[in-house]
Length: 467
Image (cartoon, rainbow, N blue to C red; front, side, top):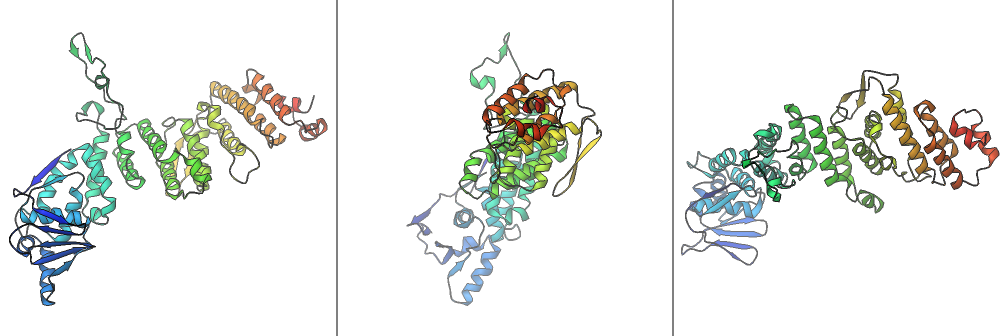
């Protein structure tokens, strides 16, 4: 971590109790700076020589015969003011990524400009930010994290924009050009794990993965994360699959963990809903940039969180383009509250319908989002391999949902018939599913089966009707 030392005099700030701070010198103090319940007993000259704001406030207090100045609205509070005060006294103070922004905002509040004193604090901090902080990957992230508690100062000073551009630029360069310690969360390189990184006595160059940055950025809150990722995407140098991986890592860290427990226990999920909707908005449009399993987890979360219909429709359409990449476990989305069943079968039927619709439609598919219309390339045609994979998937899914005692026979048959018989090389999985359904629904009479499905010619219907 980069740091900058200012001043040369010993630090003689002392504390009395939790609310009193003073400078231990023989010279009597002549000004009290009040910040909330903290009071600083200091000297006018060093402070007024570098702060235009304090000059005005002291002049005003003198007119009222009052030696106390209240600046409780100073950004960064008492700790940030103490840094500024120590600088005024020429005492040693160390700035780093954790405290530099608070000090910069406080200095702006105190108006510690060059016009009042050459080499003032604002100038020195700006040099440090430009020459060190914004050039360092980890420091830029740390500073960006600290901006939220310092709004609107951090926004007005353009620090947020500088941090975002710095981070996005570093994440967008060719991984072969990454020379710094590129992460503090990702798994270590082979050489760091004790694996020999030499071959025939020649040191092998370590390959930095393309997604080296995704774990580090997942530490950001969604509002900042979204701005960073949009900037990375705008630069156009990062593959869509890497953007997709970044969103997957973020979702597992910030969204999926204990989501079901939170919803079932009535915990306020407003933040999680905002995270979900932002992730859906940020999803790359390129097919295959995210896995079908990840999309289905997002869809499950959208149902749990009762997100807007547009987000769920968006996900259903995306999943429909790559349903052949799903697993049965991915499809077992629980029914939402109020539904009489174990699984959300209607949702899966909507996805299958999307998949099958690609047989006849070519070109592009349009998603309506809250802010914009997004186009995604569709299948030119669904390959026979994909159709076989989906048929097998649905038959296995039918075997799982057949155990639901509340699953209507018509819904079971409707889903089975959505996949054409020609897409199945064999019907073993379907027969197994039907057998499971009949065992779990012994009360379904033979005549009832015939009455409900007599018009159909599908194998599933034939067996259920007893033909």
